[in-house]
Structures are given as C-alpha cells and as structure tokens.
Image (cartoon, rainbow, N blue to C red; front, side, top):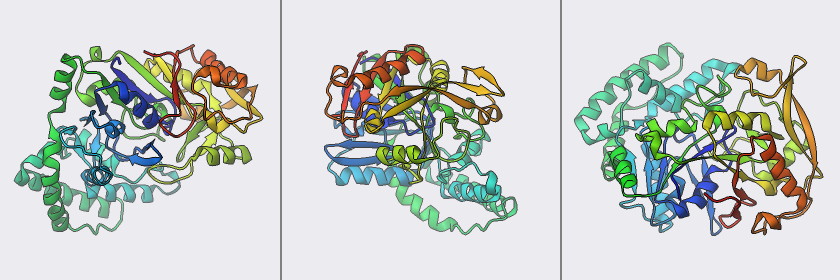
Length: 429
C-alpha cells in the first residue's frame, strides 16, 4: 500500500484504531506521530479487546514494526503496562517496537501539575484527561523538558530530573496553591528500574524510518485525537496540546512530505465530543442517549460519557481543507441501524446569516444553529454486509450524501461493526 497518514476529522474517537488495524495488513511500519497517553485507541480482534494509549495500533500483527515518534510526549509507565499486557497475551514486541530518543517524557510531576491547573481553573477548566500531556508539551516548548534519550545517561537524567522536580514543587505550591506530595527519591528508584526496561526500545527512529522508506517499505502514520482538537486550528481553547493535523506527521516523525502519498480522514457518521467546548449538532435528548448507548460512546482513556450529535458536514469540509484529505474511511455506520430518520447538518446560521464554512472563531461557533437535511433510515442490521452493494439502499444514499456534501472525497473504507472483519473497502488505493 502507498504511504499514508491517518487522521481523525472530528473531535477524536472516530474509530481510527480500527481502520489502522485493518490497513496495517498492507503496511510494514506503523508510527504514532503526536499526542500521548491521552489517546485511547481500541482494537477488537477475534473477540479480544485491546486499548492502546501509546503503542501503535498495528502491534497486533506479529510481522509489523511499530514506532512512537518524536512528536509524542511519552509516559514510560503507561507504555510498559501496554507491553506487559501484550506479552501476557502472547504477542511479542521484541525487535519490532521502538521509541524515538527525541520524544519528551511525561513524568509524575507533569500529572500533578495537570491536576492542580484544572482545579485552579474551576468552571473554566478545559477538561483534560489528567495525563500530564499539556505540562509535558509546555516544558518541551520552554526547553526545560527531559527526553526519552536522556535515560541512556542515568547520572545526566537524575540531574535534569532533580532540577525539574524542584521547579514543579515550587510552581504547584505557590502558583496553583495545591499540595505537592510526590517523593523525589521514590520516583527516581522507580525510574532506575524503568530505565533498564526502556533501553532496548530507544532508537534514532527518524533514521530507521528513512532507511525503511528507502527500501520501499510501506508506512502508515497514525494520528491521535482529531482535527478540531488541534492546538492551532481546533476549537481553541477546548483543544489538546499538540498539532493533530496530517501535516504534523512530518516533524512528528522526522520525515519529509515527499514520503507521504495519501491522507486518509476517519469520519464517524455521526458526531461526538468529550469534555467542554462548542458542539453545534449536539443532541441533548433521547436520540443523543441512544447514540451513546448504541455506539458505546464512553472515553477509552477517561471513561467519560461522550456528547453525541448528528453528522456535521460543515466541520468535515473544513477537515478536508486543513488536512488535504485524499480518502475517507467511514465508521460506525451500524450505530444508526435503529434510526427511522437521520439528519445531516448541511450548513449553519450565525446571526441570521447562512454559513457554509466552519468558523475559526470559537465564540462564533457557539452561536451556530445547524441547518439539517433529513434522510430516511434503514431500520435493519447491516453488520454482516461484505460490500457496499450489500447495504440497504437507504444506507447507500446516506453514505453518498455525506460524500456529496464533503467535496466528493473518495471513500476508501466503510466500517459496520466493532470487529476487525466488519470492514470493507470501497475504492482501494
């Protein structure tokens, strides 16, 4: 398969992991390029459920190499828990799982700072996962962070850790007026053991990726979160701390743009959001509750119930523009099986004016009134369909209405259930 970037087109939770798991069959390398353990990628294979927060979703295939790129903020403890779970299920990662030496570490004091910051903000809080992602990216930007490669030199790591620990202690106590009860020596003892386990995984991954590409290997770049959680182009300030767009695959892995052939946008056929922020098509009624129940819309990372609403073509059109999408992968079509009618947002009204482009101003988005087109539901089980032709006519009409409203981007994949085999291709690449 051609080299491709996979990104979410909404507010995350679009089903990226399932699509990545499917496309991994045709790829050699699978690479995470941004985010951290705030991601929750769920893969169901042979009835077994795995949730990955750091390890790339392609790890389920024994002949694939998986890489955590330099754009990720890296939690060693979470990573090793995932490795242990894989090993306990007889899935070996030896020699095929690597972490960039340039990735920045998420350490216990980052999580403490995350919690203290959210508490201080009160009702104005962002609604973070509490995984320390924002503080770790902040340290990276301020050039005070500690990188994975620093674990190679234990004495150097300890020196950097102690300096950061002292600063975070003062920051949390004086600025956030919160207790700071972490034990420095206990954490260092823990990380002495973590270091020994981590050393085999640490690699100059940019070099590894380039050499693999030079040999004609097929590469899948795995994004986390979604387009509208992007720190620059998302619904700021209700966003994540990294760039989630396809373009960040290059700096997030250390590759050039000529090494990417396709950009695949994962599109859930309804819309969900976790946490605070504007959501024009949100359903605060029994229909929203039905979508949540049928779709299992609870956060893989936090367990929080997701807010649910109708499909929003306005935001998907913007996602096409921001990411340069060349293909769609539609997910969770089966969740709509019980719907008599389905509504699709075609445009907004803001202050009485028709708006067809997603506003960059969050305050304007909060005033957006969705304007809908109604299509007929199919009221039958589609989970056994093997091709698009097997779908009921109403489902096919819904699919092509989405495509028509969103620049007619070709549809690569349709997912009709949670299991690996409930997926089929429409227009292969």
